[in-house]
Amino acid sequence: MSYDRATIAAQANGQIDTATGGIVGAWQPSTTFVRDTDYATPPSGDVYRRPHAPTTREAEAVIAALEGGVEAALFSSGLAAAAALMRAAGGPRVAVQRGSYYGTQVLAERLAEGTEPITFDGASLDSLRETVARHKPALVLIETPSNPFLDVIDIASAAKIAHEAGASLAVDSTTATPILTRPIEHGADIVMHSATKGLNGHSDVLAGALVVGGGDRTLFDAALDIRSKEGCVLSPFDAWLLTRGMRTVHLRVTAASHAALHIANWLASHPKVTTVRYPGLPGHPGHAVAAAQMTGGFGALLSFDVAGGAEAALALAARLKLVKRATSLGGVETLIEHRHSIEPPSTHMPPGLLRLSVGIEAVGDIVADLDQALDAVP
Ligand SMILES: *Cc1c(COP(=O)(O)O)cnc(C)c1O
Image 1 (cartoon, rainbow, N blue to C red):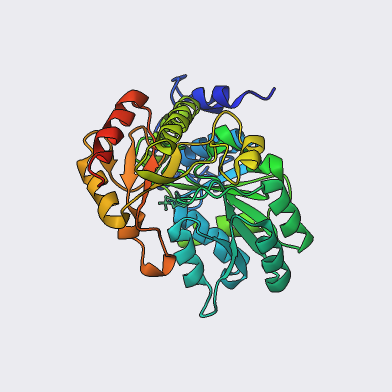
Image 2: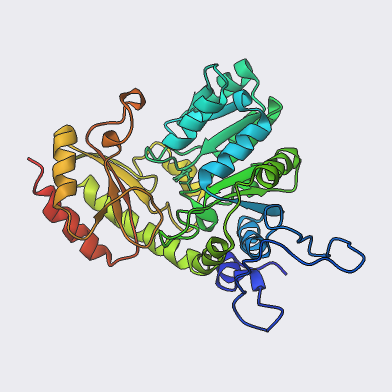
């Protein structure tokens, strides 16, 4: 019997503590595990925590079930997961999306071994098609909706383009979460998450995940080998917190998505706001694709530009009382970030852009705070 994602999340994929009957799984911190008298590896496979960790496996089972995948692997951060995957494919043989998460682009540059990283425009399937035909990458990594530009890519078309050229398709689905999109159902080979964000949702765990579908698992296994041999593993306490956080992922993501749509509409009609990027708005170039490929909402992330550039954006941010000025996204609290202050000039981040990660506070309180802060914009 396969359950709905809400059911999988709420009951941690049906896992209990088998030793005690506890409704919540135990946190198992051991780094080493006793062998039988015949010195055989125990059936669990647990001998040492770097290659195999029981508490981590419980969180992985939840993520794999939420994504409709075959297996999930957790890493010490989202970028550790991305790095393992990209290195598994051969660093210079990975095509990454321009305008995707800045850390992913930096990673692609580092792993390109002195060559220019292979990149494509995330808002254009033609750009992806040309790039793949010219460079013949082993892996294409897309991000939808992208952070912070909210570009939307049709996963099924991207998978077809990648597969026809002999490449695997991985989707960084951090901003969508498995509640809104299950990329494997659309043809992706691997799903990647910064579980730091919406999956955990409480801004208290740093973690990354890879999930593999039912197809070829060579890259996934190679990434697992990197984790096991090089040690980019999650601590069991973080894995335990992640399982706890994911019990409410469906409620949090659905509520935040509804609030984000409301806020995006409100911002779009505000005279001091020049641009709102949110795939839930009918005017967004990726709205139709997002409406078809996302279910139950368009996500917690949006970005908007204010007239008056960096000075106006920073003045707005400074005046906020409820919304916190902080990086990251997908938490229960609303956060705002001025990416232009953080990224180097080479990324051409619009100076007036503010990224908003909408939380689950009362939407009226968030709007009221933004409203009074927008008064600071000349
Ligand atoms: C935060 C983020 C990452 C990196 O994850 P960490 O857990 O911070 O290493 C990757 N992709 C996206 C879209 C992100 O938002």
